[in-house]
Length: 328
Image (cartoon, rainbow, N blue to C red; front, side, top):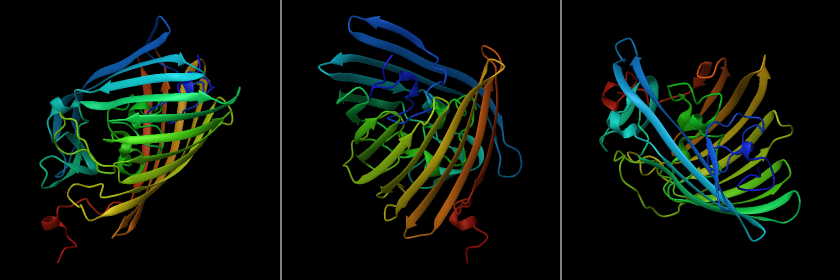
């Protein structure tokens, strides 16, 4: 089955317009309705989380996601639509405990620290059209409100190496935090196993109101180059400029650079994927910080996955201002 954005296998497509290895397993329900190819994919998990120590906390919560995709031939190309929703907001605005995690806010006044924010109800509502130029060439356009710009690797809940891990990466805001962007337009060119694309989007992260649809002006930009040299490998490098991404620091912008490589292979007929990724945030005004991620997952049974993740992240936001031991 051809992809939504070009003449390549559909299995290559991950979140937004990002790529994963061509042989990545694709779980979901597939069907046809006239000229339309349809797919449903989702999950719901129950999680008990106990983060120890004086900074930690415990919580029982549920994570969920439902994604519906449809595509059909149109003229010499492919028209596609996507919708993705989540009920993560039911866990509350404060999200769930996750030591050393930072990013976004629960009340519009103080930052979340040692907590992972919940996702919005509407994670993606997007349409796309790709036009074939030849057997291996295509140009495409993608619009999402919300959507995901051409920046970073596939979002962690769409990477096979990370999707069954119930906790978000600590590098989330160094790699793939723009996966819910309220207003994004991407155009790109595909030739065989190479894709070049640019995006214009709104750089502000979602606010603490997780049930609404936010409409904001386009103020940021990014570019990404992706290469799948063989069906087992997916590589990308990307760079973006985000205008005022943080609600609590409206005068701070940042430049984000990421690079990642994912490898997919069967081991004893069990799918295994490993991802290594690096991201750098250069704040203006502010300093540059780096984050590194290494994660793997192997499906050892129909519903059983063994996974692991190691990270190293430079963070200077682990204390509220009044509690910072370096303050004053």
